[in-house]
Image (cartoon, rainbow, N blue to C red; front, top):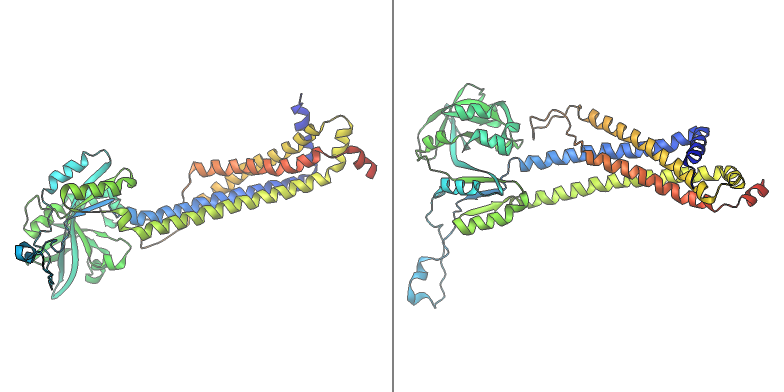
Length: 420
């Protein structure tokens, strides 16, 4: 029966008598795991921020009325022209409204779907911002601000003011930061807007919006739905777009196809709208995990080399242990115990160093116009990364100890002593 107390005592003695080599072996594990934790927390945090730049502002399904040519042209209605070859020039789009027919009942229907987290109405129109004799072209979108903040994190892009102020203030506007700079406007001022159909409407500025895309911020502004319906002279059921947020983004494609067939509307899913973005995300994640795994493997080889050299230096000790009655299995367990102790100590220190560095990075100032509310570098401290790091530390030290200790198990003590 294995006497673990004696084996661990001998392993401890070996480690303490060669404290310098033990420390170097432990530091190999420590820096390998520490670097892995730091890198993976930082890189996944950055990737999540880049993903959110798109995902936060993009609906999982965007529903609207597509303006497109009629499938059947007038000439096809004549029976005598059916079997002839016809060429029609300058085809015009069919007469259709931008508004979604029965938009409110469609929204109610979608929100009853268990896969739908929320369905929000929008009204989009082109306007002119009027500053004295100057007219600047732009877009005005009518929204339910509080719901937009809840489902699409709109508050992250409001650099001054709030979604609640836009919701609760009649004839108010959340002005794009680019327009505000061009016209030297501040919160509390009034800006005049004019829709394409004509008329001038003064709106009170309750905040500034910054998406991070300069061209968009130079034209885009928001108001609440009631205000834009009043500007356009439309009824309370006038809606031009519906943005759907799902619990699971993977349901976007099948649900969008179902909506198109059921309501005869155009429904664009997020994967179709952002195909290039999906590819970029996959490549970034692949690079992150490839570099992280490489760090862990390099650390494992370092541990193996140190333990291998340790066994060569302990040849005399191995011979004496075997000569005094220790079996080859006992010798193997002694060196395996040393490896596991080094892995445990180095792994714990590596996790602490990685956590410390990740927290340090999260305090470094980081300014980006793409996400104005982010003040420091984003870091993703996921417990799973720490479990993976520690597990690899134990696994790599086990393998690094097993191979040399297997060699030690087969050493003939007579040959070693005779060689002395």
